Length: 253
Image (cartoon, rainbow, N blue to C red; front, side):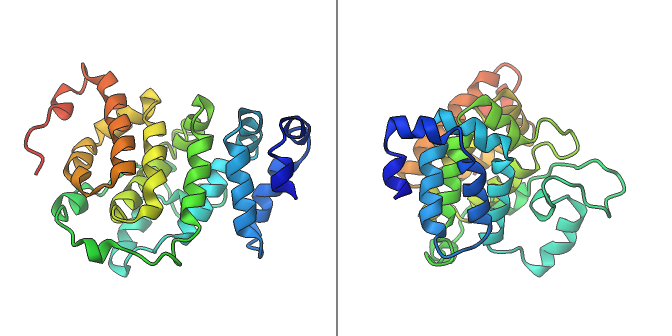
C-alpha cells in the first residue's frame, strides 16, 4: 500500500512531514521479514530531494554502511591483526572511536599491493553467491542516492571528523575491488564516482595513489561499472595540475 502511495506527488509532500524516514531506517536495521519491501521504499524515497535531507539527518549514510559491511564476506584470519591496527569504522557504534586506540587519530589506509599483485585474479574465484549478496545492491543504490548532494558526499567521507575522515570511503573501495566481477557491486561504482565529485574525495584517492588501481582493473568491469568509473576519472582530472604524474601514469600493469 505504501509503495502505491509514494508514487503520488501530493502524498509524498505529506509524507515528508512525517517520521517515515526514521521508521524506514529502523525497519531495515530490525532485520524483519519485509526487509526487501522496506529497502525498495527507501530506494524510492532516497532518490527524492524532499526526503534526502531527512535521511541524512538521521545518520542514514553511516547506518546503511554499517548494514552493508555486515553482509560482506569478512576478512581472512591472517588479515585481522592488520585490521586491528587500522580503525574499522564499520565495527564501531555510529562513529565512536575504538577504545583500544590510544592515538585517537585514524590513519586512512588502502591495501594497494593486494590489488596490484592480484591484477590477474581468476574471474571464477571472484564470483559470489547471489543469495549471500542479495541485499547489497539495495544498500548501494540507497547510498548512491544519498551521495548525489554535496551534504551527502561530506557525510560519506566523514569530513566533519578528522579522526575518521575517509575510512568508510577506503573500506568500500577495497570491497569494490574484492568483488569486481560481481554485478551486485555495480552501484558501488556510482557511489565512488559521487564521492569524487567532491574535491576532498578525489584528492584523497589521488594522494593514496589508488587511481592506478582503477586503471589496472578497468578491463574487468562490466559496462555499468566502466561508465561510472569513467565519471570518477573525469572528476579526478579537475586536480590535473597538482596530480599530473598520477593521472598520466603510463606503466600501470
